[in-house]
Structures are given as C-alpha cells and as structure tokens.
Amino acid sequence: MRSKISSSPYKIRILRGGILYLLTFLGVLTLNFFLPRAMPGNPIDALLGPDSQISMSIELETREKLLKYYQLDRPLSRQYLHYLAQTFQGKLGWGIYFQQPVGDLIKKRLKWSVFLIIISSLLSISVALPLAAFSTMSRAKRVDTTLLTTFLFLSSVPVFLSAMLFLVVFSVKLGWLPLAGAMGELAGGDSFLYKLKDIFVHSLGPVLVLCLAESPALYLVGRNSMLNALDQPWLEFAVLRGLSKTRLLVAYLIPAGILPVITRLGMHMAFLIAGTVFVETIFSYPGLGRLLFQAVQVRDYPVLQGVFLVMTIAVLCANFLVDLSYGYLDPRIGERE
Amino acid sequence: MKITSGPSSVLNFLLKDARVLAGALLIFLILAMCVLAPILSDFEPLEISGSSLLEPNRKHPLGTDDVGHDLFSQLLFGARTSALVGISVGVTGVIIALLMGGFAGYRGGAGEQIVMRTVDVFLCVPRFPILVVMAAFLGSSLINVVLFLILFSWPVGTRLVRSKVLSLKNSPLIEAEILFGARGFYIFSRHILPELIPLLIVIFVLDASHAVLAEAGLSFLGLGDLLVVSWGTILHYAFIYPGIFLGQAWLWWALPPGAGISIFVLGLMLISSGLEHGFNPKMGKESKIVEDFSNYV
Image (cartoon, rainbow over all chains, first blue to last red):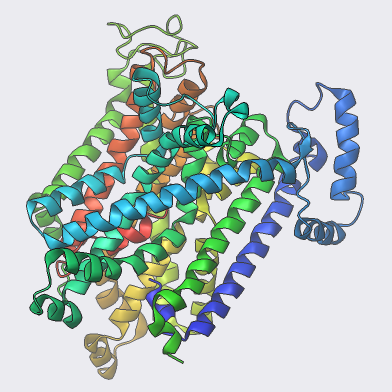
C-alpha cells in the first residue's frame, strides 16, 4: 500500500513521514496525558491504584510526589504543557509499585528487549528469504505449496501459545533450556565467554518463538516480490545467460526480496513489540514487554504509560528508519526528483 | 481483471477451494461449540462445581481449575466470547471501512485528505500496547474491549476500500456511465458496491481474526472482563498458577483454550486466503491483503 507514496520524490516522502510520525507522537502524548484524568475520581487516587489505602505512610509521601509531579493544583492547560516539558526531558514519572523513577526502570529493561528484537529480526530474515527464494524457484510444486501452507498455519498460532508450548517442551520436559530470566544468577564472577554463552542460552527460547511468529509474514512478502521478479526482463536475461541456479538465487532472486522484506520488518515493529510482551512474560525475560505485563498486574499506571510511550517511540523510529533507508536500498527513489 | 461476485459464485468457491472448505469446517466447529455450549456442559462456566485442580474424569471432561470451575464448560462458553468479539468487530469494521473508504475514494477532495491522514496516524500507533493502556485505564469490560478493538481496526479496511474504489472509479466502464449521464449514488450502489463485496468479505474475516487474537491477548495479560469467560482469561489463570507447567495440568487447562484460539484464527485465515485467491485469480501469488493485515498480534 506504500507504493503510492514512493512515486513522489524521496525528500518529500521523508518530510511527509517525519510530519506524520511527529503528529502521531503528539497524539499519543495527549492520550497519555488525558487517560489518568479520564478515570473516575481524583487522578491521584486513580494513579495510586485500588490498594492505595493499605499503606498510608507511603501513600502520603507518594501522594505529595505525584501532586508535585503532575501539578494537579494548576489549570489543565498548564498541566498539559508541564507534562510535555517533563516528557521531552525524559522524566516519565514515579513508579508507584516499583518505587523508582519510571525512566530508570525502563532503561534497565530496554536493552534486553532491543536485544531480543534485533536477534530475532535477523534470524527471521535469514530464514524467510532463502525459503521464499526456494519456494519461488519451485513455484506451484509440492515444496512450494507445503512451505506456503506451513507458514500460513504458523501465522495463525498466537505467540502466547507457541511460547507456552516451547517452554513446556524444551525447558520443563526436556530440560535443554533454562526456565526463566536473561542470565543465570551465578554468572557474575565467571569469564566473559561463559557469560556470553549464558545469555545466548537464555535468549534462545524467546528468540526462536519470536522468529516463529515473525517469519511467516516475511516469507509471504519475500515470495510475492520474488514471483514478481520472475517476470522481469533482467531476470529472464540472467537465465538466458546460462547462470547457475545458485548464482541466480544468490545474486538475483534474493536481492529482489530484500527491500520489501526490510520494509515489512519496519512496519512490523509494532507486531514484534506486541510479541515481546507475551514472549518475555512467559519466559520471565526481564525486558520491557514483561514490565508492561507486571505494570498491568499491579496497576502501576505511571510505569504503564512510560512503557507505552517508549514502545510508541520505538515503532515510529523504526518506520522512519525504513523510510530513510529506502534511498540507499533502492537508489531509483532518490533519482526521481 | 476478472472479478466475480454474487452469491452463487461465492458458493462455488466454498465448494471448490480446499482452503475455504477446510476453513469453513473449522469455523463451523467453533460455532457449534457456541451454540451447543449449554447442552454439552453440565455446569455453568463460573459456577464452582467440584474441588479444585481435578484431573479429567467422567463428570469433568477437562478437569477443574484452581478455584473449582469446570474447564470443559469454560472452554465451550469461552468460544461464545471469542465469536461475539470477532463478529461484532468484523461487522463494524466492514461498515466503517465501507463508509469512510467509499467516501474518501469516491468523493475525494479535502474530506479524503482528512480521512486518509487520520488513517495514517492510526496505522502508526502500535496497536496492542495502546489497547493494553486503554483497557487498563478505562476499564476492560467486554463492551469496552470491543469498542477499543473497533477503534483500531477500521483504518486498514478503510485504506483497502479507498484504493479499490479509486481504481474502479477510473475504469472505462464508470467513465462511460458518467458520459451517459449516470449520477453519483446510482454508480456507487449499482457498479462500485457489488465489485467491493469480495474485498469486504476478506476485510471482515481478517478484522474478526485480529479481534479474536487481540481479545485473547488482552485477557491473557489479565485485562479481560471478570464477568465473562474467555479463552484468554482461562489462559491467564492457568499461567499465573505457580508450577502449572511442571505437572500435567497444563494439558487440559492451558492447551485447549490455546488450541481453540488457533483453530478459530486458522479457520478465518484459510477462508480469507482462499477467497482472495478465488476473487482475484490473476494474483495467484498469495494474498497481498493477508500481508497487510498481518501487522497485528
């Protein structure tokens, strides 16, 4: 659907994208601002959650902190400007349950999610592209239909189901993989190589499940664009030149699929992030997605909002990066001035 | 471009295409669960009907959960929630997509700009996290969840309808009609709407499948309606029960609702991919639209 935009010059595309993402970001900020105020009753009570009566002493202290932080004694417009100013300074509020600044909390968790997403994206690409090429080469034969059906089937398995099954089979029944966490408790004093192995083993489950969820879409896109390439004269010429099958595959067919697949991956960032929420929760992986789950469990609203904001920023940045990379990956777009 | 429409040709696909047939069977299974739920189960889903954590036995075919709810009855009634969410979001999504996309594509102008830019903004927001935040703040009753799902499911359909209407509007047939003096509404209802029907069916099916997945996901996180049994809620309670995966209990507690969701979604996916293939055989290359929709949970 994006092809409509690509017909306009590269710079306009970037500008339009930038404005769109900025608008979206402002919209999300505004939503974030109004949500606690749309809850019934006093926003402080709402923010403190249902259990706020239990610990009065902590509550009073926190209440003051919150009142000062949100400037609730001021008019709404001032509150809004204050909120924007705070957010742009990276101050995301105070986690009521976690008892620490939301920003710090997120900083600690973010790296693990980024790690998961990057590794699983790379893995998904390297699985989906060759298989798509393989499928294209044997179009409509048994291999192709089998692959297609398998991926269609995989794409309908919800992430939380595949993650649960994976955990039960490989961690509980077979005991091959650890049950939870991102690294072992005792890993602190060990050598760098041991740590690396430990992190790798712990991430294997989450990464593979994310890859299972992500690769079907990439495979479909890759296969579509490679099938389109089959009709192109440059590929026909390559075939006529008598190039070997491997050469055709590596030098012609796979490159034809890379650009659409990367675009899809950027657009799919929201999907991947939603995936991390389930995967990290089930594997007890200390990332941002699990923080979202935990914040929902204990109704820690400032943390919830902070995580949501960071996730939005990540998605918008991914989209913008894809827009930017278009000029490099497909030079034709840059030339159409 | 070969476009087939009308009820008889739709039926033809159902009988010819293996994918559609298989998908329809799976959906039929789910719907049968919905309809027969009170007949097949001996207990109310939210009634405490036995001691907790029973293994499957004659009285409780899938055992009981930690509170003592009959899991078989929960599974059957959970199908109702999923179907309700899927159908209501799908229908509303299609209606909004038709109105907004039809308006934007057919009339154009400033209205189109407003609609399409709104669509752009909505499509940029990560949908699942925003659903989580809205459900957490504004309450996660079933009606709320459905409303939130509708709020974030119309943009993709609108975009698809608009581009289809645009391409139809510029076709020689419509141009000729305008030369013969046909008016806007006549053209739209007689010549554009029928051509849109295949697309609308596909949009319905895909909106519904995403709604089912998203509702299950929200309930899984604990953002479900406490008064309604849903597959996601069953999974939630199973998952937060300590040591659920260490014994056998997950086999009859967590697996059946998970499989239910998969079967429902797989059925819908099979139907949409088969329909799309049938409606637009030239593509033959698997679902552009399925791709567009796969941006979800």
